[in-house]
Image (tube, rainbow, N blue to C red; front, side, top):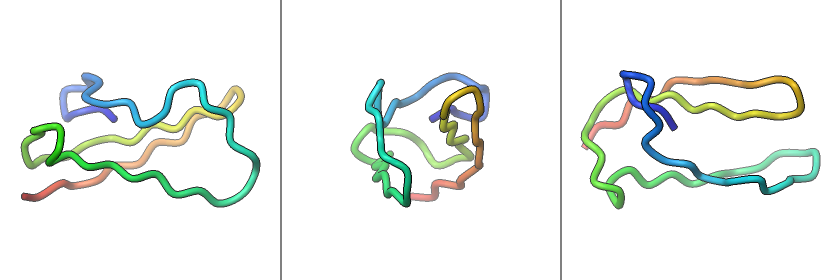
Length: 58
């Protein structure tokens, strides 16, 4: 997870391999003391990456 400045604010998984299919990851910014704002999710898989933006509002 990256903040609006592109700085990493959290890492949900690290090096965990997942089998093909649908998965759910839970992110709890309030437990990390993060402020409301726009965050970017970055998922790396193989030689590719998926990014998506989320808005967190307290």
